[in-house]
Every structure is written in structure tokens, then in C-alpha cells.
Length: 212
Image (cartoon, rainbow, N blue to C red; front, side, top):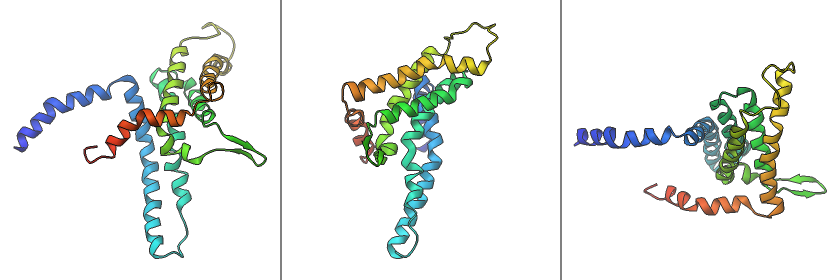
């Protein structure tokens, strides 16, 4: 029985999984998730400590360890997807800038509230609650930078230093990424986080079921 099950998995399931994981964008997202795993483990330690505190309230509260590890996974995802897209395209000199653009676009669409005390962000959006939205804007930014990765203001033999070329060649990609987020949030007045959550609700509902 076990041999039959193993053969079925190797012959049917494994090829399907390999085909899915080899897809361009899926592999980038999967790689980003792998980077986030250690932060979720660090958060789990804080959560376990919280259980101990219920029995010994005098212990120090380690909740900030969770808030600033797994609680920032959305932010990390927004950086990693466009960053890894440029790495995959062989454009390492544009990778960090693409990641920063992803973070900027993601935070722009949080639509922060400006008060006398400063600009206020909803911390929940930075973590798991904003994960799918971070993936969306990470992919959007990655696509824009991928499209423009082979375009340059300058010729190959230009005497201008490479780092200066890199600054100017990334301007349009940065502006387009931010402009897209600006139109959704400030021009159309859409709550992108709510929209993405609604679209992905069938997936999350299934994932939280016994079959998921």
C-alpha cells in the first residue's frame, strides 16, 4: 500500500509541483516566503513566551519581538519580490532600488493619516494582514522594473559612471510604480487592502479549513 502511494506521489504529484514551482513569478514569491520563515519562527518564540507569562505575569513582555519580526512580513515581501525579480533578470545593480520602490509603493497605498503628532500608519498592514497586498504591489513593481530593465538613457560606451547611469535609468520605473499606487489610493480613493483581502478570501478560507 505504501509503495503504491509513493509511486503515485512520485509519478503524479511531484511533476505537477515541480512545474508550478518553476513558473517565473511563483518561484520569486516562493523564494521571498523562504526568507520570511526565520522571522515567523522568531515570532513564535515570543508567542510561546506569552503563554508562560499567563502563568507568571511578572515576566517581561516580549510582544515587540513579534511585532517587529513576523509583524513586518508584508513590508519584507514588498521589498523581496521586486528585488528578486531584478536578480533573476541579471540586473543586480537595480535590485535594491527595485526593492525600495516596492516598499514605497506598498506604504503609499496604506493611505496613512496625517495628524499634529505626525503620520500614522496601521501596524497591522505591515504584517500578515497586508501580506497579499504586499505581494500584489511587489509583483506590480517587479513587472514594471522587469519591463524597463533593458532600457537605458545612455549608450554602452557612455563615459558616465555606472552608478550615475543606474540612478537615471531607474527613475521612470520608480515613478510608474508610485504613480500606480497613487492613482489607486488617492485618485480613485480605493482601500487596496480591503479589495485584495476580499479577492483572496476564498484562498484564505480554504487554507484555514481542515482540508487546507
